[in-house]
Image (cartoon, rainbow, N blue to C red; front, side, top):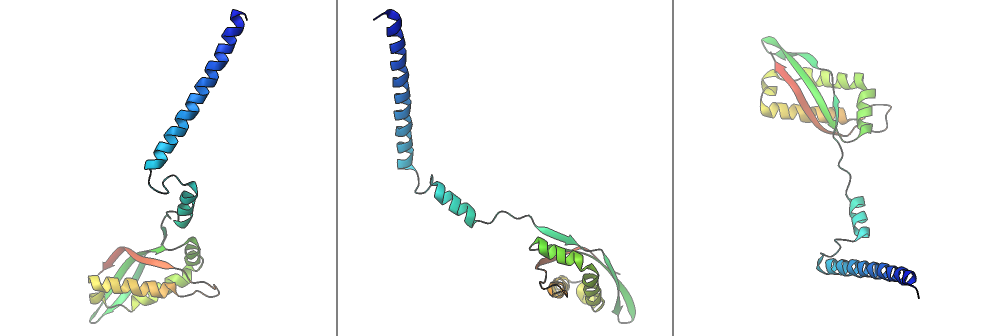
Length: 162
C-alpha cells in the first residue's frame, strides 16, 4: 500500500469514529436528561394536547356607544345626565349585533336612563345597579336576529349628573 492510500483510509476511519462518538454522546446525553426529567416534560403528544385544551388568549372586544344626554325628573327641578358607555363583549358576533342594531341599542339605553332617579345613580351602588340593568336590557335579542349579544360588562367612560 502506498502512503497516499493509507492517508485516505485513515481519514475515513477518523470520520467514522468521530461520527460514532457524536452519536454515542448524543444518545447518552438524551438518556441522562430523560432519566432526571419530570414525567411528560418532553412528550410532544402531551404538549399538543395541552395546547389544544387551553384556549388562546383572546383580546377583549369593546363596543363604544355614542354619549347619551338625558333629562331626569328630579322632583322640584329637572336634572341632566350625560353618560358615555362602552360594552365589553364575549365575541365578535356580539359586536356585530350591537353595531347592526345601533338605533335599537340607543333607544333601549335612552329609555332606561330617562327612568333613573338622579340622587340614586350618583352613588356607587346606583351606578352598579344601572350598569347591571343596562347589561340585561342590551343583552335581550334584537329582532329579527336569532341570537342575542353576549355582554360581559357595561363600562361607564363618562358619567355626569347636573
